[in-house]
Amino acid sequence: MKPFEYMKLSVRFNALESEVYPYFLGSFIRGNFGIYLKKALCPFGLRKDCDGCIIHKKCFYGEIFEPEKQESTSGKDIPHPFVLDIIDSQSSQEQKSSHLSFNMILFGPALKNVEFFILVFSLMSKNGIGKNRVKCREVIVEDERGRLVYSSIEQKIVHMPQPLRFQFGTQEPCRKVKIQYRSPVRLKREGQWVGTPDFETLIRASLRRVLLLQQFYGSTDGYSSGEIIETCAPIKNISSDVQWVKQLRYSNRKNTRMNLGGIVGTQVFEGNILPIHLDLLKFVSIFHLGKSSSFGQGKITIEIEEGN
Image (tube, rainbow, N blue to C red; front, side):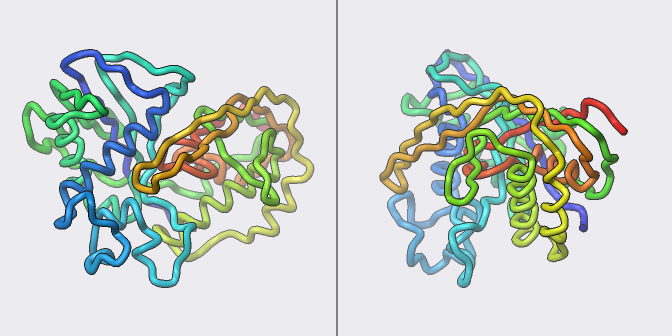
């Protein structure tokens, strides 16, 4: 399979004063970002619904937040071309902080318009975020190596980050792997939410994510799914410490309450873990696993505990 291109931006808002942020930071950041992106790009303003808009197939906001409306023959499963990466920020309570930081992973059409993302971060800093519109002293954007891309103090892009490439076929087999679910992972099997996934369920979901992103934002070649799934059966879950956590979000755009809960915790799997398994798991450790990834859900990390 051909390499998959992406970019990682690290964003930090340094606020003028301490602010209470909602415990679900992914929803908070995504909501603020979407509002400012539409304000910046839409000639009709926030009140205009994208349904029936005469320019929706040429609109960058539509490409980012409503990609299904850009495709005349596609349905609801078109993934957003970005994910939020907010490790270890999950909490059941609101948080008071004088700064706010997160990573954003971009791919597909987002790679061609990085400047718009930086513009929106700048507008969020200048005009304020959250219901109290807290303005920030400075917003800093860095690339994956920690190099400065943009500072609102300098008000210019000082370094344009280059796309990274996820290369398939670089892993070695192993006997044991630890999976950490760092933000709620939402997996379904036969129409039911999965509380403790087995290895097959994990690989099925990873394979689905890889093929979906490749279909819309990468190459058309793919894996033989059936053969991969058959190799999962001998691999067993030897340790599991996971729990389901609730996470609610109210969508102003859809005027509805959404339950985005999922599992967090750790599992260890043992058996004949093949390079293809690790390829899939490494991929979703970057691009997230399961549903609601654009809110920061589905973040996992993997640790190879021993080799053959």
